[in-house]
Image 1 (cartoon, one colour):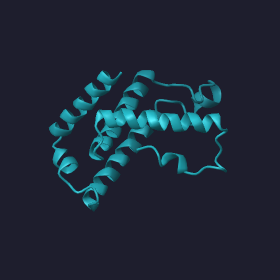
Image 2 (cartoon, one colour):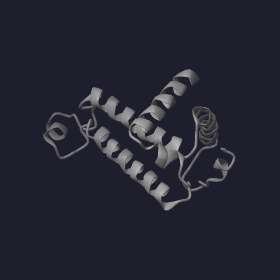
Image 3 (cartoon, helix red, strand yellow):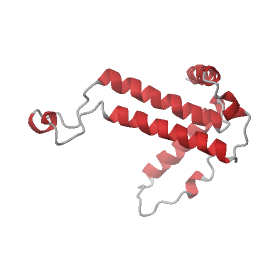
Image 4 (cartoon, helix red, strand yellow):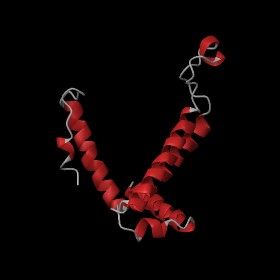
Length: 139
């Protein structure tokens, strides 16, 4: 698994260089508003890809497919849904790389956060008692 994560991480670095985003990501001050704008713009790209993914599903309850054909919430285009999900991964990796994470960091942080999420489920996770205290050790 780690080799595959390394492979996609390195491919994303190559794409970042091809797009000439490497200077914005690597050479800038991460507290600079320009860097923050880069992150915000990338979040907007993720939002757009999420909308495109949602459009691969019959989510509009007022459409003929939903009302008369019983297709509400069914996948409309599985192949496109898969591609949109990967597009989201492209932008998520871009943000992670911009934040200074390498593939080892991503792997390590994922496993730590996974453990937090599993513990939350084991302990009856609820919104009413939610704090972010258990995330403080995810570093």
